[in-house]
Length: 127
Image (tube, rainbow, N blue to C red):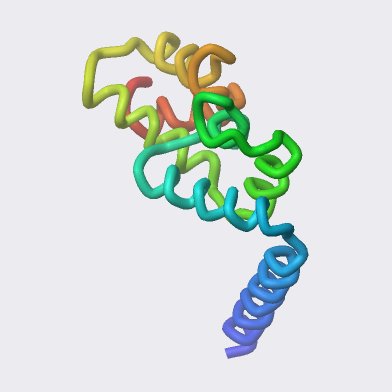
């Protein structure tokens, strides 16, 4: 019972921190959060890839600062996003383990960290 109380207290503290952070966002940053959540509901994104999408003139056109603040305010498991992206790639075509890690971690690709890309490739069954 004591362990459950600690978990509940920790969860409440996290939710309180998220609410406080969300309240400190500007209007454009709150809009960028909505855009980010929409993208994440459709496909996997790395942190840097999501910031690039939000701030690209070909994407949403938010400032890099607003896109970064928005993404930083989210609670996202980037490893799980990498696994999701890896699975999406494998559903379209074959990749070697190293090829998929390169695709996921490349600056021209998905921009995951090497660690996240490796995790994603392993979870998707490429390694």
